Image (cartoon, rainbow, N blue to C red; front, side, top):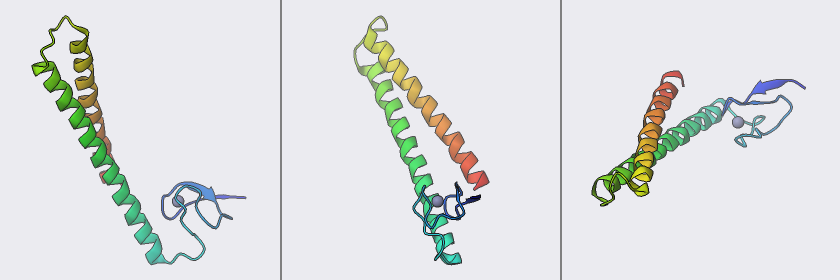
Length: 108
Ligand SMILES: [Zn+2]
């Protein structure tokens, strides 16, 4: 049993498998066009996931920052630190996601 790459998601699968165990792609009956279409679909799904994550990270940052600023808690209170940490995580997540997005677009 040898391993080969799935034409759709490029993950390692058995060459005897009829469908990919990762994305469910049917290998035997697929035409060139099917493979291309499936690949395109995976790319769209991936960039949508990046976009959703960016949005979520941005929202976390904005909400936490707004709470920190206008929430009325003083820097000595625990809520302030929680909000500050959430804002930091949101910003960090956003930046990491942008970097991943750029790398993905470069090498796809
Ligand atoms: Zn696959």
